[in-house]
Length: 189
Image 1 (cartoon, rainbow, N blue to C red):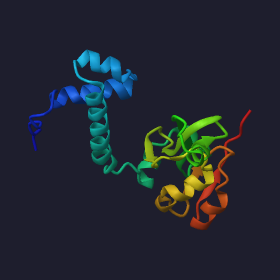
Image 2: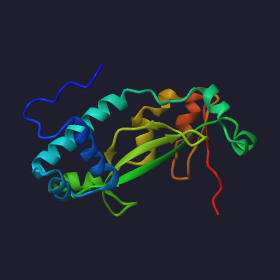
Image 3: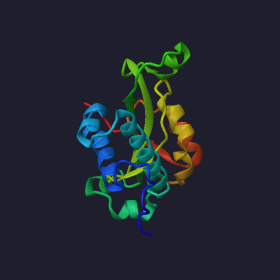
Image 4: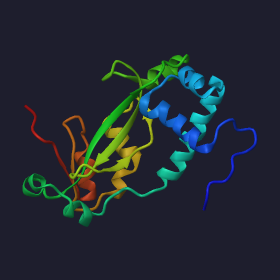
């Protein structure tokens, strides 16, 4: 299926819109700078970024990235195979700073005590070989690691005998044991 021609009211070709999106997301250029470079309004820049973000979310978000147990085993580094042979996924949360909402209730929901600012938080799962195998949706920054693990859907992907590695902040061992999985907290200096 080829790229269809953009609607007549578009100022840029689709490839230029994608490049514009990448300038904002990958490089972090300000919208005003992008507008000046492309000779368009900041409103158009905003519209293009939102459109491409939604499109890429729909297209890329539908691709399965969870690795089978066999694939994890086949790509496992030697040290993991030696010391933690059942590790299926390494879990961690990441937080993305956001502006403080004007609503006080929304401010308290997005406020992260860990980052001491307003954030959105997501759960990331990584195979021992370093491949990202799980990305949750974003939650408000006040959510706990335990709660995000429960709500994200990653527990449905685990099988009996799997092990998850996570830092000591993840108090999820009882949730995993109900599935027949285990939690490994690596030692810290």
